[in-house]
Length: 237
Image (cartoon, rainbow, N blue to C red; front, side, top):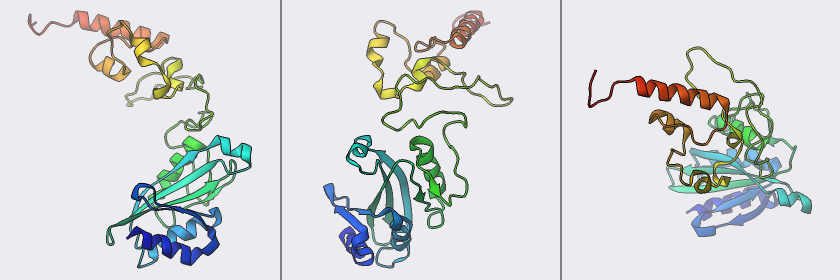
C-alpha cells in the first residue's frame, strides 16, 4: 500500500523526487529541500495518502559527505496513515548552515521535534515560531549529536545554579560531556562494585562512582553521614 504513496509523490513532484527506497519494507522518498514542506502538506491533504499521524522528525549527520561536496545532513520525517494503514519516510538533504522549511504549519507537533533537531544538530528552520534549545541550556556550546562533537568536551560551561523549588543533581566531572556509549564502563567499574548511574547510586545510598567533582565528593560524604546516623530497620529506633 505504501508504494501507492511513493508513486503519488513521484507523479506530483516529478524530478523533485531525488530517490526512493524500500529497504526491508520501509518505503522512503528523498525530496528536494525546497519541496520539503510542500511534500509534507501533500502527504497530509491528498486523500490517497491521508497521512494523518505525525510520527517523528529527526536528522542524521554524515560529515564525510562534505568532503565530496554534498550536503552534510539528512532530515527524516516519519508519517503514518491510520485510515489507510500505510506509512512513509520522507527525507531531504541539508547543507551545514542552510535553513530548512519548517513543518509547524502542516504538523503542529513538528514544533518540538524541530527544536530538538536544532538543539542536537544545529539545523535551523525558517519561519519556526519559537526556535531555541529544548534539551540543552542556552549557554551550551556545540551540538551533541554531530559526529564531530568532541568526546572530551566538558559541560556545563556555566556555574551551577540553585533554583528554589527545583530538584536537580549538580554537575559532575568530564564524563558528563561524553556520549554514554563511548565510555568503557566495564573498565572504569572493574572491581568497584558500585552503581553506574549517579541517580541510582543516590537513591540506594551508594557513592557516585563515576564522578571526580568536589560537589559529588561532598554530597557523598553527607549521604554517608546521614546513612550512618539513621536507625537500622532491624534495630528500630
